[in-house]
Length: 355
Ligand code: SAH
Ligand code: SF4
Image (cartoon, rainbow, N blue to C red; front, side, top):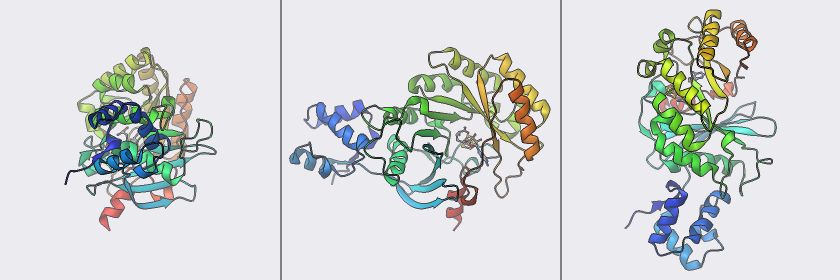
């Protein structure tokens, strides 16, 4: 028996080549693409504008699968969290964070993560493997299935309006698949999420930042978490490889380029580590030195058993935010969402694994 090929692994061009390879005209690829990504159909038999013989042929050779939902929880604040499983049994989590009439789906790019940030639960789980293109796109398609957003709604009416690549894993360690997946998610004939509504967060893989952003046109977020190399290297070992200066230079290059946009710097507030007024002032100097237009996202730390860090006090966070604000850097404090369902990085999966 031949193994069936998964169509969601293919870019638009690859799908076209695939159909040509089985003797079909290339316009069929566009129809098929629309069934998969505009209508969200997973059964070839429903593709009513394709001939029955083609539908049968497609069913024989191909599959359109979704990651399987193995657990889900909805917080009292409506934050929705899923544990998803792929064909080989590997699992990642996905979170939907609703706002009033829109919301962001947070997707994962790897099972585990090799970066090993000391404060991150995913980082303590080591890297198992990269997600494939279909597994990355498939997560968002699961969210659309659940919220019944097929066929693709318009930009104004969709509830799942934004995507943040901030789940498990380091996207720039799985760059080729992430780029392809983002290009599928933004394709106008299909899922059609606008590039400005997608934010990709990286721990600062400096040499890849500019290229990844050029090839996707999405927004950039950088997990900075410290104003200098001393502190950053203590909490993020990756800083020994790519120093702050290198990361800042890449950010400046990105901002001076074609896709120039504000950069969001994520900053986890860790008690007694990176939350002093000196740190805030040092951050301001750093931004000025590299002439960056930036906003800060101050993240209250979500502790987990054995992590060895504590969250900063509310007052300390407010004072930190005020100093940045006064220097012209908007720095909202991220509202902790879904705390009753442990919606922080890596926690649902670990809880399940231990059971
Ligand atoms: N690997 C990428 C994207 C995924 S992590 C990156 O690091 O940017 C997404 C965000 O969650 C990062 O800013 C990370 O620092 C933050 N995070 C990790 N552990 C956390 C915790 N315990 N509490 C709150 N935020 C955390
Ligand atoms: Fe990996 Fe991001 Fe967690 Fe660091 S914070 S270990 S880069 S997932």
